[in-house]
Length: 414
Image (cartoon, rainbow, N blue to C red):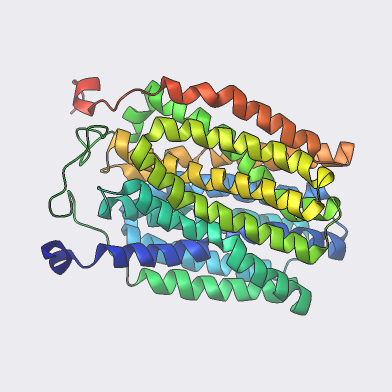
């Protein structure tokens, strides 16, 4: 109670972060634009997939440099500035008539500004909740996952009723109101903040209030084991995000049902973030990582086989639900483990480094699927290859030991 009086209600700040990530999740509406844009301009699946790939590369770069902008302007002000630029990017995308225009404004501008805004939004959450970092991060990134359900359904309606130009414009206005507007009410906790009575658990970094710089973190083998695990999961996750709507259509679903499938993927993606994050708090990060990748592999097998075995819609939903749970959970685990192993002083920079996994996976995942579809007329083997990669990387979490204080690992570096 004393802490709330002094600093304000930390759950309120978490709620504001949740709202911002919900509307930053505009990223997940992309697959709904694919078919309408191809039909209007005559573009191929590979050409439209490059839009998503460019966006994911720039998104990763934005997350990587997000800590720099957070230090330059302050984390809250960085959200305000780059949230505004994101809204401008979506508005300019509404004038799309060429692939170059689409690549520049939707891919590069929206991707980069989204990455910066998200990095700074996520960096605030674990600092308010040292006692429940997995759950807190899960809740705040749940908004990012719910976006495809909330904004995906809205986007599909706007495209069908008014066209893609109006859809992009409405999304830009929503971003301006709900991200930029909410940022004026957000607050960063003071250094070393902890709720009253909090005692750090034994599986947490002994120097949690300080911790590793990005350069020090990159010298640890644990980071690269985490990075490899995260890469396998995100390759599969981003591949499915980029194709869920066109995949549904390819197996016989109507466009409206394909949009529903996209929304339900988002729902389970969102559900996986707090639930798997809370699970990681309970059973430990290592066990949660193994569980999460097994879940992803099962989901890929289901989405590859079930649509033709039982029913296109039901089979796709079952696979997408399992994949969504795993993908959402991997984000919570990946972000919270940065805090547990490497401290909070440089958590924005460290999370940004982990988020660069989105650059190669944002390129390889969607393009692998597009290549397979273009040459074989089906996404089946793309799902199978991704599942095999998940199985191969299952041992990566076993390479992660207990957190080691930075003073012990780097005694010569002050």
